[in-house]
Image (cartoon, rainbow, N blue to C red; front, side, top):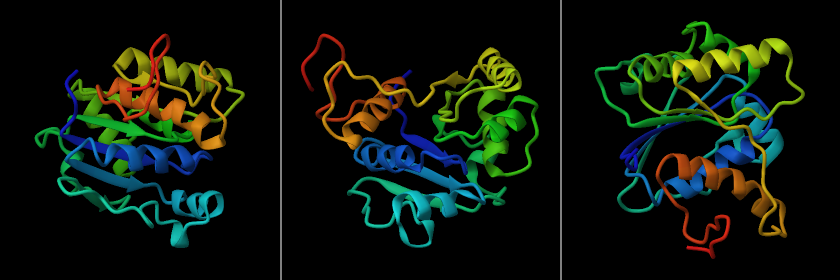
Length: 198
């Protein structure tokens, strides 16, 4: 795929909001337009895990010149990416709860996130789902297989340790870098197997 000009970042209420924050932070210099949508529970988890006021994932982050970040309410079906006629290039759900994944696997569009995922699947556009929960039940695995067969990329939040990351953030960035890589984007300073940093 080519690098997205318009990207949707969706955040469920699963633990792992740190991945969403890092992805948003490092995507902003690379993507001109980002649509951000949080599930109903996500702000509570963000506030708990990241100590951000009111669960505001953008708190303290300023989009650079040339990037526009627009927040959309979970029930805003007028969001442009709620319809296949308005082209957004890719969507990432990070973290993606198993409950949300189950609804997406069965075409249940009960909020903007699941509706947008349905649009990306039917329009054959890149949809990256980043589950973090474990262990997984047979139901979870079947839902993931259904979504993979429908065209989604299942990218669990499994960090790597090839380059011996020394901080928790460096560990988390190994997951963020994989997400960016599948969007045909690369974070300055990222490292790949058998390569030095960019």
